[in-house]
Structures are given as C-alpha cells and as structure tokens.
Amino acid sequence: MTKDGHDHKHCLELFEKLSEYLDNELDEITCQEIEQHIKDCVPCFVCMQTLKRTVDLCKQAANKPVPAEVSQKLREIIENMPKTTSP
Amino acid sequence: MTKSNPPNHKKVKDKDFELVQAINSGRADKFQDLVERYEQKLYNFSLRTCRDTRDAEDLVQETFLNVFRYLKDFRYETKFKNWLYRIAASTCIKKRRKSKFAPERELSLEEFIDKEEADHSNQVPEWAKLPLDQLLGEELANTINQAILSLPDKYRLVIVLRDLEGFSTAETAQILNLSPPNVKVRLHRARLFLRDKLKGYFKNDEGWP
Image 1 (tube, rainbow over the protein chains, first blue to last red):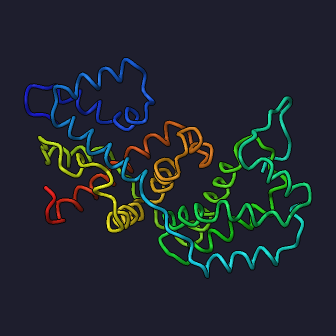
Image 2: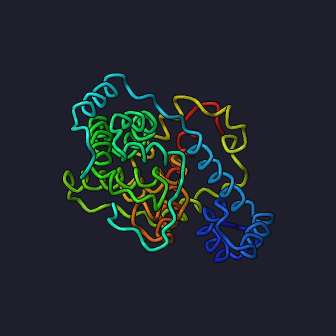
Image 3: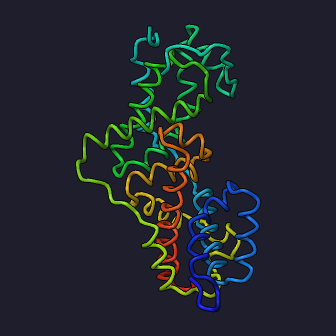
C-alpha cells in the first residue's frame, strides 16, 4: 500500500485488522501499533478514513416506511391466526 | 426455540419482557403490539437481505408467523429482539436455499488489497471528510442499499446485522450460528466491498474528487 520506505508486509497485516480496530475489538498493543503506523503511512491512513466513513454511512442509512398495503395484509394474517400460541 | 432452561438460568429482562410474558400468559391479542414494535425494522432488514420486494414482504410475514408459533418456547435466554432476528435470518436462509443452487462467490482480501495498491491514494477524499449530514440523502441511501444487495449472500447478512441493525459481533454470531472470528472476517470483506462501491459512486458523481 505504501511507496515511501514502509514495510509493505506490515501494511498488509494491518489492512486485515482495520475493521476490528474501528469496532474497538483489538487489544491495546495492536491498537497502538495501528495508530503509530497510520501516523506515518498516508495510504493506510486514507484507507482507514474511507473505511470508517463507509461504516458510518451504513449506520446512518435511513429505514423506509412499511407500505400501508403490506402492513394491512400482515395485520389481517395475524387477525386470522388462531388466538393461542404454540401448545 | 430451546425447550428447557439450564439450571439457575437467569432470564434476560429487556424492553420486550413484559409484553412477551403477557402474550404467553394468554393475551394473544397483544401480539399486534409486538408486530407494531418490530414491523418496520424487520421490513427494512428483509428489503436489505432479499433481492426481491415480494420476497421481502413474504419474509416479514413468515417471520411473524414463526414468532407467533414458537413464542411459547422462548426462554428469555437472550433479548427477544435477538431471538426474533434469529428466526428472520434462518427463514431468509431457508428461502434462499429453495430458490438458488449456484455456489456463492467468495470475496478475497487480496482483491481489495490489489485495488488499494492500484489506487495509491495519498489524500483523504472529500466524501470521507465532510460532515455526515452533508452526504446523507435519498440517492446515497439507495446507493448503499443497492451495494448491499449486490454483496454475496453470506456477507450481506453479516453486514446488515452488524452495521445496519447494530448487533454486536457476539450477537451476530449467535443469530447466524457462526463463530465470532468468522463474523469478523465476513464483515471486513463486506465493508471493503461497500467502500469500493462508494468510491465509485463519489468518483462518478460530478463535484466529488
């Protein structure tokens, strides 16, 4: 990922862990290692930022309302079910 | 759907606890309240996991029917919501098996690394820097939904549960009956796949670098 004097293998190792980093699922030492690395490695920093933004956008994606006819049909089906749950 | 409680089992008392107890104590009429509570979430989950709107509607119906059928067996070992999504996910997987026999495409980490290397990005693009509310809109929401729908099935369910429904890795693993490391691997690849789609979207959209 990097052109300027960085250990390419190291970039690839960290690339695998970026999601776990964003989700706070890594141990402290690995987090520090990633933070140190992206301070010096611009492509990895860009990669991290675009991945983070992708996750944020997914998390903010709005829900669609249920169409009235779908909701109505569901209510009718439930209305017509026997009024006891499983024995 | 488990039949018996382990000894000293502690019930999970979430926001649905009382309602589920009421239904199971004979107030079957209250089931509509449960439907109202989860209908929209489940409908959107279904739209994002089924490629066809009709299938999504069927999935919502089948899930609620199954919930109604098996609610008496719910043992409060997990949040009700997690149990509901477990039923929805397994109904979704069964529907897919019926309709499709082609093997699923695997996403390899290498394909994303190769693209990354070709990209040689040396600055953070505008779309990753601007405040989120300046980006969000119907068109982008549709792009995200379309990108999710173009993911191979096994990755799609994981990213929908994790990033759109907000379940943790452990909860997603439980809902899908996968190991937590497997959830993490699939999630990372799914996110990289989506990131590529978003990069393409912003590159092709005039006004974005």
